[in-house]
Length: 219
Image (tube, rainbow, N blue to C red; front, side, top):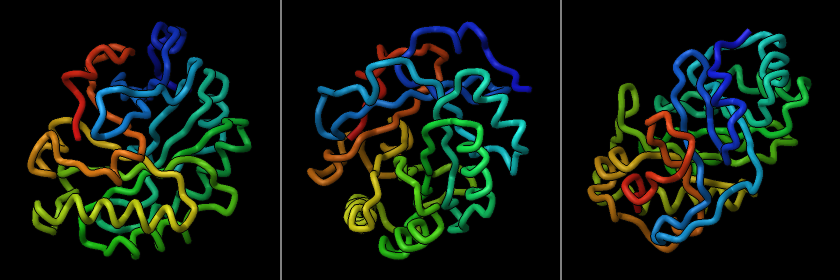
């Protein structure tokens, strides 16, 4: 069974991603990258787990999640080393069999693949009935290192958004203030195209609220 913070799980939160065994929390907002105003993704409490740090899990793992009121699973499908996660389909299937209603995917970007190759690889690897969000991870911590120049990165991300949208995928950007500033050259770097997609911002301070958004925002 899972180790989890029962007080956190039972609290009335909007969208908290609880990572078992580490108690970190990630928050999602549907916000414009260029706007201070925001719209919450969900109006009711929702509990999810980022599975990306784990290998293949048995079906009992997902049954355990469901019994603890988890309704959203998230799993990396494309790594920063440009490899498709071969466990994705089986874990997706196990999650659905456990009646966990929602499942999102993460594609970690480094600029190594062309935007078209990123979206082709991901769209071909996703299950046919996938209807979750594909989060474009903007990161630069080992082993994820960008291989294109800073001034090319916003245009690159724009092209990934355009290309993946043409495949019918729902998209979001997953990053943090510090990582975005490091990778894109400034906290304010952004564009009109990117302002149209939601943001999953990370700030692991163990407070399940959005009170830190003014300090944590980027783009």
